[in-house]
Length: 310
Image (tube, rainbow, N blue to C red):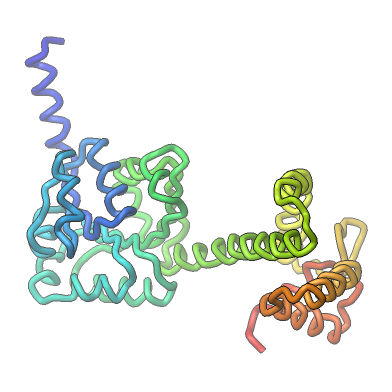
């Protein structure tokens, strides 16, 4: 193909792409904008601090002087600010609310399920389509095959723009019509992650108190990690989903041996003056389950004692 013909084809291809505005260009918002630009989308960016948006101009983005200008420039508005209150502060303006009618808003701001539902109601009342998302990745994963984003809201709006979502990550998933679903799953997965991270901090504290080389701790964790992964999925999640809390032939571990070993940890932490504020919470859950007669049931039976705060 001749260079001139190729150039005209490229211009035509870009012209056919949707125009998108990214509101909020911190590290994550900038990563979203860069991914869109790499895929040939006409991208406008806005940030409260304009200097944070300006580096994207060298990549081909248009830097809007106001939120209203950014909304007017695009068919899809991706929002990535600090929280839903920040979204409301920049979009709940009469002029912006009028300009957003008939457009798609994709909220990729961290928040709560009820915050997503309230946002969906507001945008619906102002004539805009709305999808809510949770980014399960750090900025360096955005635009890669491993980039995971969970999207909830109208399936039709997702399907109609799937190509754009694929530009943001190879593992972008629509997980339900209910707008709060993405943030709910995000919170659940973060709870699992923080359990692992705080557990690691406890392990480090015990290791340091007992003069265990942390390299050795890392090596031994690598060896037993598959066992723990099996307990999490095969035992806790699957058995709780099935409501199978009594011990049976498939039980991997009951509460009784766990609680015995847990007492040893409490004693060690007390002797070494290691902070017990988190593990004392674990102890309270153990004790409620045991008092209810579940000492010899599958460890998954503990899930019945976290559904509601006591």
